[in-house]
Structure formats: C-alpha cells, structure tokens
Amino acid sequence: MSKTLEFIENRIRWRASQHDIPNKNSTFFFENLTLDEQGHYLSNFSEKDTGKIILIFKDSKKNWTGIGTKMILGYNGTEFHSIELDRIKDVDSKNRKEYFDKAESEKLKPKRFNKKNERELLIIDSLGNETVFITKKGRDLFALWNIMLMITRFNE
Image (cartoon, rainbow, N blue to C red):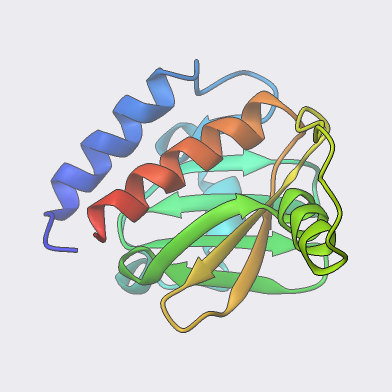
C-alpha cells in the first residue's frame, strides 16, 4: 500500500462518517477514549506497529476490534489478533463464507443468507491466513466490513 498514513487515517474517518460512526454505544474514535481506556487497548500492541489507532468497535468488555493506520487489531475474549493493513487480501462475514463454502462442497444451491445477525468479520491476508474480528451485530459489522473493503482496494 503506497498511501500515506495521513491519507489512510482520513479515508478511515470518512468511511466511518458514512456509517454514522462513532456512536455512543459501541464504536468510538480512539482519541475520545480516556487514557485508561486507551491503555487497555494498547496494552498488548505497540503504536509503532499499529500506527495511529483511529476507531474502536466494542462488542463487550471482552471482545473488541481496533483500526489503526497500519494494522487492524482485536481481542476475542481469549486471544489477541492483528493483521497489517497492507497484507489484507479479502474480507467476508465468517458465517457467510462457511455457509457458501459448505453449499459449494455439497453441490447445493445456496439459499438466501441472513446477514443482519452477523458479528464476526473474517479477514484473509496475503498468505491465506484467516483471522476473525468481532463487533456488535448489524450496522457495526457492516461499517467495519466496508472500511476493510476500502483497505483491500488500496492493496490492489
């Protein structure tokens, strides 16, 4: 990705604004969090690696996803995960991908898939590794999905 960090930050903020982010319930601009909250999210990551953290998506006290200018990072209640933005190749809903993969392998015609209850975003990196990032159901997932789709287009 040959975009500057400032450009990436501006695009993430712009895309977030298209989805009414931040909201008071589950999505926040990182700089608006208290220093204690910021420390909680950065405790296992270096800002040198993540870049400037822009957004935090909270599902609960245990599950969260953050987007920085260099990396997407998160915690699923048991493990920390991260992927460098310039290594993101594809983005999908975890359950949607599993549903369509199963339908294809069993040679079934897939039925309509209900996406509104999804909360797990699957990100595939350039090496084919799959990592799941968690948000609240519905609009938060779709906002994160759209931001990450934008990032994949930077990588083309």
